[in-house]
Length: 393
Image (cartoon, rainbow, N blue to C red):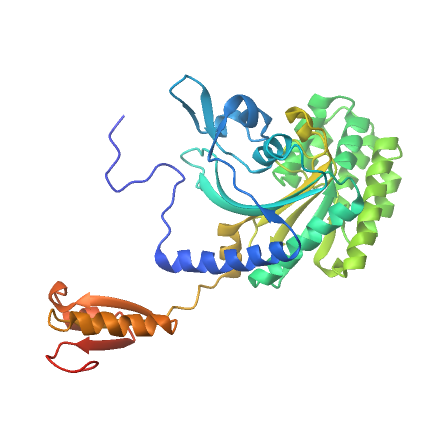
């Protein structure tokens, strides 16, 4: 294996240059401000977690985990998501705090990528977890908060697609009869490969009625009137409960006045295996990839010996920036160029301007090779280069 070129980065890792950093920072602060207004408390978890706890509990596939050993031989992982670490936190450091818990985070997560993947192996997520509340009000709150956060970030044209894990699972199992065959169909839905899904359904040894049911699932997308069509496809208890959950959720969303931002998608399948109920994804009009996602996961906290229902969401900051398609306003910076004799005057002038909230760079004249070229970087230049007085000379 050849040695990496000195300027190369590990697969999936990216640098963030000043303009993008400032853009991300402005959007980040707007979202965090909105989450705080809804009463969510900020937490941080370690970048490294034990593989046998958080690594195993995470829904991220094992080949995507970054693993390493500590000095005692324990296997560690770079956190692949934030939901599992927060579940661990809720069952340990916060075990004596009563439910419901409303927690928010801003953190980088790490997922190994293949050479040809072209996806980031490290990206920043902002999100929330509402732990200990099993009601539709909780599901509605996290969706309403995601919408509020995206609007606060500056996004105006987007939709939240809402589905239910219970309904899809019930329909697939009721029709194909076993988990293995159902999982094949789930894979097509997760990849949004609807052509492949149709072809696979047509190849199955099923009655024409059952094939028709599976194909009709693809039509259960649109406004919430599609729930009536969904009821006709499936009549078992699990499917009925899922649809009742969605009807209750719709009532909550109507109370928030945000139904214009949501649509139904009953063939929505998430990559996280721990979801148990309503799930959702946020789509911008100008980006094909979801910029955020979330849903209900009522079984995860059992793995940490503190059973509790939970729901939440995460927003991908890099994708949100791409969807917004703009950059932060360039900060006005004053540059004071000084000689040794006028250094003290320049420092005092810089202090004065900074006290007024003006960003100031102090630059020794002898440290500049080309003054004309250097000056082009700034709109406001002050020269302190004379022997007396202060200011432009």
